[in-house]
Image (cartoon, rainbow over all chains, first blue to last red; front, side, top):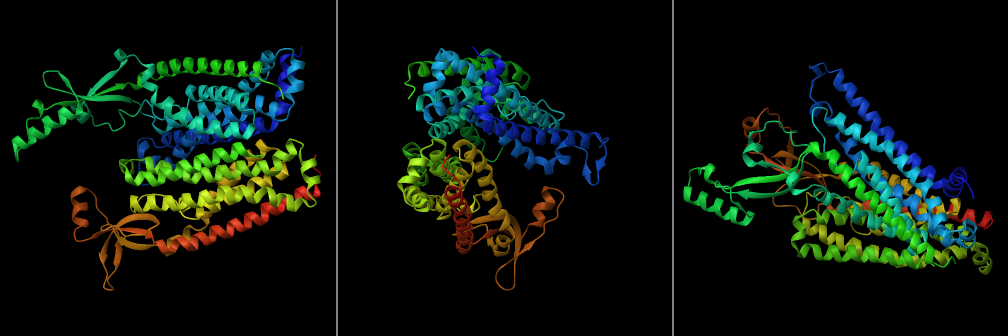
Length: 321
Length: 268
């Protein structure tokens, strides 16, 4: 039986175009984000509490002309893990089926499941290693852009560990799609559509990784008394409701009726605000980012294994021709 | 031969057409949904064109069926034409319909919204044609589908970003001043907002506002009219001609490359 090095060599020989493209894309994005991070830190370090020319020494002023580039890199970073996963994952089974080489490859490996595992493992390593670089660089870029604040859930899923785990999940999805559809380009197209749904779904699912008791609450009064505009930068709002002065929670519609009635009763005067329902926001504090990322990562790793298992089942039962 | 790719492209295009037609009748017009729909109008024709294009020659060579296909047809250029035009027609027509549907959507959304000219009208179909030709050309040169697709993506991004960049100064020259209210009909792109005073000729003259706080800013705009610097609807067609010329260049360039590749190089 061939050793790990032989499978690595085989992965390179069969997917050298895809591996080269993925590596290049990840290096380019990582280098651009790292450059911006270093540049912004250097700018702020040279500021010395004064100003650069006429620009006051605050990150929001010094970095304002870099906002567009930072935004573009973050957007590309959101697309990257899905592109990497699909480009590397889809051809593993789909190409063998399409080119009718599965006839030869599967019997030679002894077991189809072993063949799939050995083909997937090096590709997964390449995907994870390649995406790790931009994941770290974009994370550092965000921290450099907002040096005085906890970025927490800001641009969640587009930097750090969640980015790497999304690439692994997309790779699993790509392999499974390639095995089910059996053709390269159609599987890529379906994968691209599913990736959009997956990205939106994973973003919406962030509150799922936190128990209700772990949520923090912020009231309207606390929001109005805070002068730091970036204080809530990394917070992830989950839901909001209204609370009466006696502590009873009410819906938005009922609160709206009470507030409207109070303003109508007060006429031209300002109604007593302490008697009005107060907005209460339930949110995940920025400090819980690591916990949420860890829980999501475990779920995504399980999802990747499930998808790989599903692909294995399909490969095992599928006709090679 | 490309039923999966064609079916998926058609489903995506038809969904967008239905979405563009239905959105003005719903409350979605007030949300970001219509902007998402326009973003997909920009992406889907180009992605579909590339995917369908790379399959025409690239797939035949990668699957080693080019031997048979090219032998059965006396001339390879005729073979290429026979393979390309049905796809161009089958997907190009829905792209045209999508351009009309998004035009209606943009009319309902009103001016002042940020969108690109390539999201509406026949330019939607032209972008598909450019991507299709890029796909055919790269498929013929690289002789494999996925690498051709991966190289094609940055090429299409460069073309899609390059045309507006190259024509930016021309478009700025065509821009006119319109009052913010009532919204002017037919404006196809808003460059910026500002304040203006009436001119003697009956139009407006843009005024530079300098103020330091809310009160002084309120005073500075007293008696002025809020205006938009925008591209009139009449500028759409000259822009479409530029896009058509780029399409012709893509047909000639990438089509020529594909012809050269399949006639000079063997099928293996």
